[in-house]
Image (cartoon, rainbow, N blue to C red; front, side, top):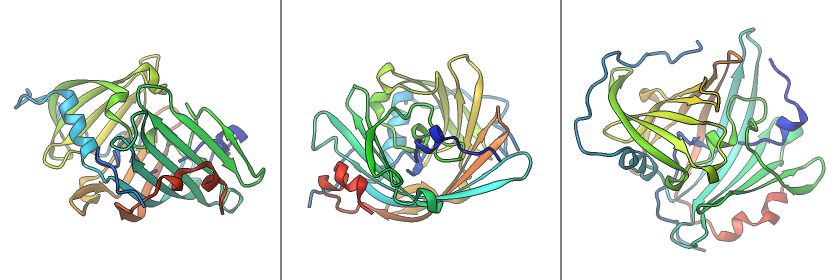
Length: 289
């Protein structure tokens, strides 16, 4: 199992929520203030689109299938080709601010719960409107908050980056609808997302395969800036649960095709739509134990 470097320790973790991009957490409204390949391949015969939805329409549906805010506990199990494994646990607190503030779309607070040497360390990520995000890290060992750039940074010892687990916003990309396909026996929309410059993405593009009835991504394929497919993310439809009208993939597996490693993220507890005051996301909260 690859050992995390000091730079990796500065990286973070969400949900997916989809945590994760894939979790796509939280509707556009805000909460009130106070195997190296997918298990099942896509259908070889692509189907022509059956309706007039655009790629942006479909991806907006993915983002609308989420809560206005949430508190999520996740467990991550990572493994490599040699059979070595390691685990970590996170708590992610997220809220949409797009209806409260003009310049800020959402805020995410991530805290490590395990392993012990990272306990209480965390990250604060502010997703800004059409400008680079603000990102801060707190390491309990140094008791200092620092502004950082988490691009290309992995969540401690895993195959997820912060970009993968922090919920995305519609303003962060351009969207092209591709021919419909079938994933794991389920008809899916297919959308190619090209991140915009301000998103500072690690990917040149990614292709999302979206279950049609509930707008849940079941498969996402990622390419780097050299045009090489480097990762894929799968979410078994059998692991999707309805919680307060939102369809949530409770288990996701990210595979790194270059390193032949994987990480499975499992949501162990999810509180939908808690009333989170803006002060929950103050830098002082990042330091609190």
